Image: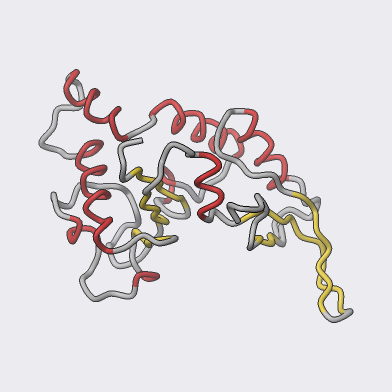
Length: 193
């Protein structure tokens, strides 16, 4: 919640593959140390109506408050979750064409899309996704030129991306953009900030 600074929703991770409950927590601490967007997390014991459900790692959801905290200069944004969906092969950011409609199936359920819109992202915002993908992976552009680098750097924070990927690689996390093309969030400024 932007007014209070407290999250309205928490993700509760059961850490089923990490019985010590340390990997996720330490991962977020490492991400923060590497100056990547990382919210605080804590252990939580979940009890509902007097029934104990276990220990979890609790962390805020990537909501409007999250993005406003980490990207305060951006007033209008499009947020997409990369996943396996209506485009075969996952959310690889491969160039499919210059139009937003090239990146989802018309009339499809937004939650089943490869680039799933999050928060208040509308179908119109797929135009910004198409522009981002064109800037970083259009095969008609020569990636060895200064013009390509200049265009890509206008829309892509390469240093922040490389910091995040270094930590993710160090942790051995496989659900991400460059290994499985899924379970990542893409934040695109719609106001140039």
